Length: 129
Image (tube, rainbow, N blue to C red; front, side, top):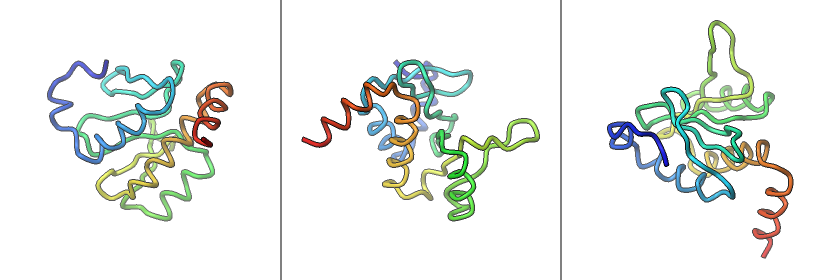
């Protein structure tokens, strides 16, 4: 499991380790390589990626939320540019500058968007106990 590049994991920040433990605790989450990144997936659908370096995450967000995050805290959040166009449903998170509780919320929301409804319902029922 995880990225095969040992140097990648040695460079992992404490903030990334905390985010990773949270994401991997979400039901049916796996970690798999994705090009030069590592990715967190639920049922094969990517909800976050981890660029090399250990200080950033790229998290799937609601397109309306991306702009608000970047405008609200530009030190913690940045648009992702693909070619010459912004990718509106993903945001880059600068982990040392981001509030850990907001990172967890973004990860859970991203997981919910990608997970099957049955998996989300089971998770919600478990959290209610």
